Length: 93
Image 1: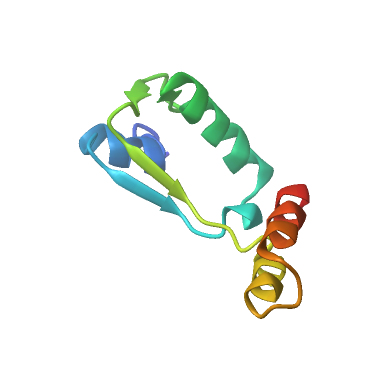
Image 2: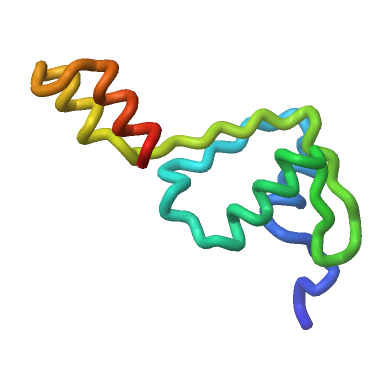
């Protein structure tokens, strides 16, 4: 099929530009397969694409953002709870 020789979007981008910054915005909304892929990257520092090529991520910066717990932190900022209590609530979530 057309494009069968190409790797995945993430592995191709990092293979071509190994000194990259990758942002996963609101990572909590990602599919479970994304988490499994991220675990491999964060654990091993590399990822194998669908073509069997290993892509090195050791020079890649990965940033993940999340809105989980934002309401707890906001309540701590407006004085409804202490910041320490807000932090504890966020960590439980």
